[in-house]
Image (cartoon, rainbow, N blue to C red):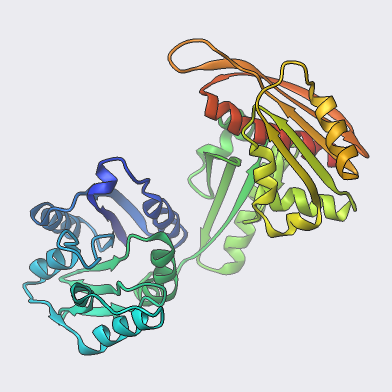
Length: 386
């Protein structure tokens, strides 16, 4: 099966929103063994959307649309699909009643324009949306399937997994796909690729590297005609990848970097406090992004750059003031150079039950230096705990 992803909305092509839906769906399609031909963005213009969809269904067996199914006049995905089907939308009484109930549960009255979200055409099967007002469509147009889903990511992801994907499953060729995502820290993407070497050139299993905000991810995907064969192929390649990246891998599942650090601190029966200067509090914010931080993180302090304060002094002060087992001090004081870039050194120190200190020269935008300070601190702490 071959597929198109069509992301609809002027806010996307205007650069006001990042198209995370397309990234998610691309990964989902790969996991199902569906070949993705194109990812296309198109603004809120009916003729352009219609032409884009017509071209997509001429090349692909599956076209997945996100966005353009709201209640306003510039939400035009339904109109485009209806035009290609040669059918006229009509309001479904049961759907409009469900949308009214959605508003009523929140103490609101449904605006009449939301009745547009209850449109249906004879060729379409409704995809329920339990967390929003925009149902999706599952439409057979000739030889192609067109799936229309909301642009709101949390609504789209749930609709895809609970409604769209199960309907597709019966139409997919029976082939098993298995994958794992190795998350690394303290190493760049090119260095990861060098260490993996020939593995990244394999057609099967597929090994891809991706630079993310929480490190470099290595996704390995194997396919076969049976679960056993796919798992065996995956295990062989994963073992090779682990042997080359072991010092840098912090997770092989969907656990966040913060969750891994907090779990390790808990297992070691250690509490922690953090003091940061010039970093925007990036490392402290990282730790506090997980709810279990309340049991482990005793104090977070973030302040502007201070020339007369060293990271080890910050770490010691944080530990003493809170009574924690560990103190982490992070300091940056970058100097502007040119074209919006700054250069300087990220300094990290750990004091208390574990000790360590490292410096990281860097040249980047100020915000990127702050972001990297959080990642560098996480890596120093991870290695100290290990």
